[in-house]
Length: 357
Image (cartoon, rainbow, N blue to C red; front, side):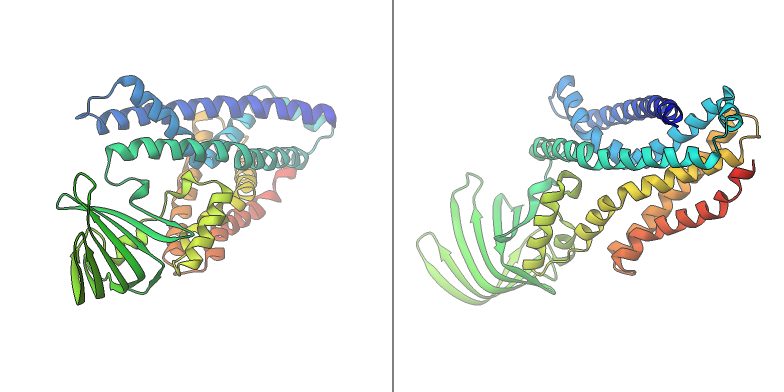
């Protein structure tokens, strides 16, 4: 059995390396084109765009990895079919199910390594990417962040920079806010303090505002402040979750809870990472049973096309399920496990046939 495991593992790793390098190269090239387009009006060097592409590509490869694995398993079986190695295994007494057990173990191990090592590296690189890119865009990571000290918003309007800190969000209101306005040279214009601010529109209504000018102090029952943010926009301004490690995601979730902020997006992301090895396992089984059930059909292109068809279906199913969960139309657990349950059902329907062929 050790010989079989070693041989199958070797073919699997060669196939995975080949597909991984091809997909990574494609992602890298597309990122270069995207960065060149973004910086077309900026005086930056080619090496700078290459650096940004290198930093941003790993996290995108991580998102594509289930499909990389699906194609890897297809390539694995195509090599087996072409070299008649699977027939040799069967003549020596190895069942198809045994091959699936070995591949399943390899996929789970791959998933664990991807989550613990590759994702950690990718998220750190993405964080560096966002920090660099934020200097060239007003839609960067630090427009709105949540820390243990509350919600922080950086806004720029009419040549003024406005920094807002709030302790909590309650429906369409920010509670216990402190606003500092700076001029374009970052000199303080005034500070505003209030227990409640209506943010239902981008013109904030500051209730019972205490205004501290440079040389004056005043009170206003209602103060209007023009901003670029309303409640809906603030709700969407999560930190880029793909730039956060497991520990950072957990800390962010705790900060959201303290602020009375929706943790749905963070919970979805964490659940997705936790179930990632299971998802890869089911992708492996799906691709394997597909190839074993169509092995008599000639034509490598046709076999790969079937796999790509299922990859597209899985992609849209994942997105649909994610939208349902993020909009809270279904529970987070159901939205995460829906694609997994569907994959599991398909695998169960197809698995019973493979040892008969």
